[in-house]
Image (cartoon, rainbow, N blue to C red; front, top):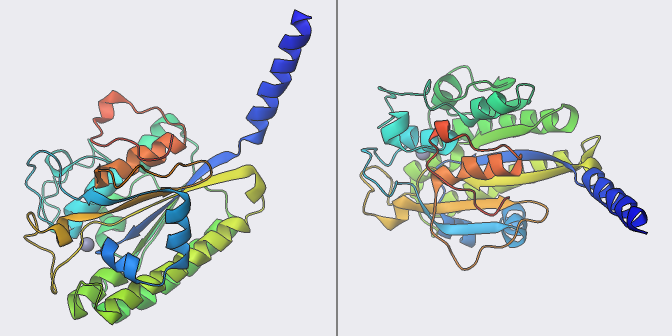
Length: 304
Ligand SMILES: [Zn+2]
């Protein structure tokens, strides 16, 4: 009898292992995107992910300790992609001087330390991210020159979304990072506010791109055997036409963090989160054990 029970348990355990899909991550960056403007915008794709996943609009772009960074993109994306604050990654502003990515690299490098054959891809139209922050990427797509103005970013976002969708449809991939620049550029030109139609429209456009990426994932050859987590966040909000000097301005320093995938539970209320939580969230989903030597500053949100 006992043997039968053990055999049955083995069968159940094995079937559970084969039933669980291969875990993957789509990591979305929307530069300068206020969560109150997402709430105002018509964003069916984000709305569905938010409804089905863990979502916080109480996400600080600044650490609980003073680390000297400006409320701008260089330190923001460095914190998001490395999982540590500016006193570790060293980027205080958009000059990137003093960057310490050798010691605190992009999380692709952390993943590769544990899984050397992991396939990673970055599609990004803010050139400093592709040139300076991304490392250990199988694919690193980026415009050849630094872009200027909202129109250029609108066109580049569209092209990147197409490239990323093509990649997602056909290629083997474990983690794909996609960064969109037009929301920030539109904010600088027209205003960072949910009452600014152009700013809201830029968020809606990015949501359509996200929809194309989700469709591409659904069309993957082995989609049924895969479980994708979508992580999405931003580096700062904005007030008026700017977001610098925003250490005490909630519209700038408080943003959002989303983690949505099969089995991810809704957050209780609107928990305090930090942009450095995005990397531990992605790594937790992938089953990568956090190495204490990495000195990550965040904790996983939603995913386990
Ligand atoms: Zn930015």
